[in-house]
Image (cartoon, rainbow, N blue to C red; front, side, top):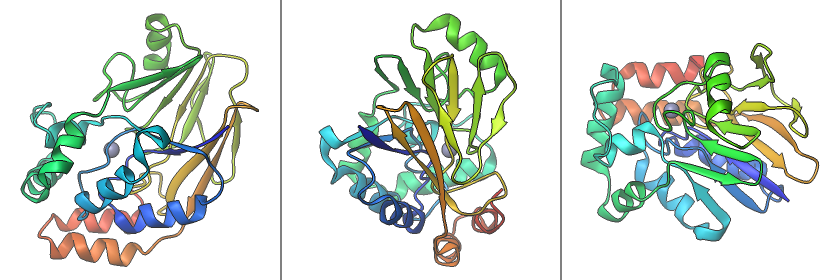
Length: 240
Ligand code: ZN
């Protein structure tokens, strides 16, 4: 069965629309690796689109921004831009959507798979890398980790160094211990400014990375008009 893997949407409605259009017909279920909100100007709209898929079709995990907006995680470790965006989102978010965010699970497991926003050790906040991967596999019984949070697509196979994953790249996770960090839908940071997503095929045990153009100008303009920091609009153009 094929799943759509989303990560770090960050309230970017234009990017989410582009990804869902591009992925149409390619998947049966959706796994979202957290950070639906934060940074962008459309938190309610992004949540409402996801909610419409329903609880069977969509599994959405909690990210650090989702947790901060829900009041579960303190803002002390957020940088100033992120803090400002969280506070703005708290003012904007509708009650039902806040409740939805508050109830998101921190991880999801299925057979050999462990999915999480950050890492098995610190589900909300830890950034994945080779060291974290090694420690993670000592803590869990699963053989494959899917994560977000880094906003950079890469794979760590066994004890090897992380390898960057570009558009159209296919990763086989059928054998060894494998960590896959997925691209960000709404705030790419790998200097490719296109929205990112992946399709996971659990029959062949492979994922394929996809990048898709979206209306960056519109998303950036909304950020500026909303009174959010201008840097959050500019970085979308650069993909940083
Ligand atoms: Zn994020």
